[in-house]
Each structure stands twice: as C-alpha cells, then as structure tokens.
Length: 408
Image 1 (spheres, rainbow, N blue to C red):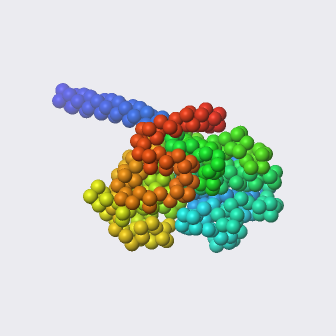
Image 2: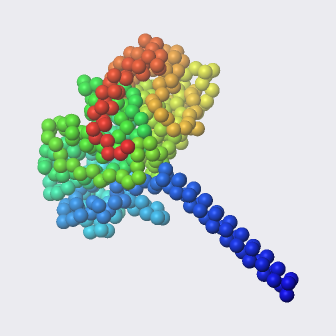
Image 3: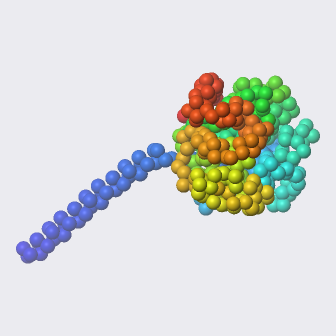
C-alpha cells in the first residue's frame, strides 16, 4: 500500500507539473502571437470589402478600369474583380484598360487596342491607344465607374495619369467614380525632383515629386481637392479604404503590376533606376532582372565588372543595348529603399567616355519632371547638392499632401 500510494502521488505530481508547463507555454505563445499580430496585421485591400461597396453598385451599369492586378484575394488564391462582380450579379458593361492592357501583357509604351475579353465577352476600351481619356461616347450609358489598379507610387508610372484622365472624363459627364484602394509599396517616403508645370506629360500630369507617398485613393482625393482636373470641375468621388494599412507597412505585391516590375526589389529600386529610362543606359530590360541592374556597352569595363547582354523578352521586344555586352552593376540583392538614390546615375554619367551620348534629353526631362536635374549632373553637382535643391518643393508638397492622407 505505501508503495502504491507513493506511485499515485508521484503520477499526480507529474500531471500537475506538465499541466502547469503547458499552461505557461500557451500563455507565452499567445502573448507572442498577439504582439506580432498587432504589428503585422494582414492588410485587406478595398476590393476584398465587397459588403461595403456592393450596395453602391446595385442596379447600376458599371464600367471598370482594371488590369491583371485588380483581384480579390481568397484563402487559396485570388479571383479577378471583374469575374467576381459578374458572379455577384453586378451589371458590368465594359472594361477600360491602362498601359500594358487588361491582362498586363503589352510592352512599356506599346499601344493597346480595343477588343473583347475572351473570358467574359466584355468590350475592352483601351486607355493607352488612340485616346487616353474615355470619350463621352465610351462613357455613354454608364451610371458609375470603378477604378481598381495596383500602383507603385512613382510619378512616371502611368497608372496615376490614367486615374486623373478617367476622373476628368467622369466629371465632365457627371458620372461618379469609385476608387478601390490598394497599398503603395513605395508609400513610406516622399522624395525626388518635383514636376514643373511646363514639362507635364503622361509621365507626370501634376506638380508632384518623383515619389509622392500616397495611395491611389489618397491621390484621387488630392486631384479632386486641389482642382487639378482639366475640366475645372470636381468629380463625385468615393474611396473604399484599405484595412490594417499604414504608410510604413511593407507590402509584397502578389502580382507583378507591369511586365518589367517582376518583384519587390525591382519596385523598390524603380524610382532610382527608372531615371535611366531617359538615358542610353539599359536598366535591366531584356533580362529577367528588370530594374535590378543597369549597364551599357559604352561604360568603363574596369569600373563596371558586372556583364550581361540584353535580349528581347516578355515586356521588352527591343531593349536598349540589345545584343551588346553591357558593363554595369547588379543590384538584385538590394534592401528596401528609404529615399531616391542618384549615385548610380551620377557614377554612370561620370564613367561614360562620350557624355554627349548619355542623355536622351527630351525623355530624361519627362522622367525627371524638370530639365534642372540633367543640368546639375552635367555641371558635376554632388548627390547632396542636388537633393538640397529639392527640399523647398518637397516641404511645400508635404503640406498639401497632409490634407488628403487617409492612413497614418
């Protein structure tokens, strides 16, 4: 009996100890998860908030400005917004397609034709062909336009120009517009030269910095509030907001927003390497590392020991330096950028033997938004000197921007 009693007591003690340890372990895990979930809450894009915006679409003829990024996320993947709305009995009448097309397969700068979507049979109206602004005829019969496109927060990325022109057309024709907001992967900073009004183009239609730190929804509010629409009117604008998003959020795009921005590294480097588009230097087009490297056949092969040869590929039928051994830098391991870097551009110019062939002046001015940056580089200004010259305009913009921010 004493032995059995001791055995029972020992077993009971072990059970209590195990239970106690498990209880402590559970509390510790829960606390850790709670801390992580507070700082890394899953971002919900506006397109996923169907119960919020579906009532606004009921019994309306709807046009949708969309591309391959216009998706609703599911547990096991995603569904395209257009397909989802049709399945929910929304009267989708037509689709408007930006640069690169509705399915996102056209090269940069390649004109997109009108057509029919083979999956849905819907008419597709190109906003990157003969016209870039919807005509009255193309909007005829619509009660509402929905805009849902993933942006990357860089002025010369043309989706914000499409947004502005669609807003202008809607204002002129008294058609409301509904913007389904998405995160800006470069939304955590404001930097770069500010567009000068006399140099506006489709690569920059308003006087904003190169990196403006706003989502599409916030920027739409700014366009409206600052009365930047050509018609001089304000559009009836509704923004469906993101959930669990701030400007410091790191957002990893699940779908490439255009053929030549294949991953997070290319997107974070795009504001800096995108300036090479206005030069004769290749910025990775014609390789699998678009906007993650740069080089040219005329750069100093001693200073630049990374060698690659651009070739035609998806998104670049005829890349710069096609078929030529290009000497440059590999930046594919870069971390998240916190500002625009000019060092790569300055170094490339410095190491170009015939400097008269470096810039494509008209294109560079469009990308920079001003002729001043080229003049500063040619004059030998340092990065610090150039950036100092931006500050007055940047501070003025930040004050305007603050009025329209939705997220912290």
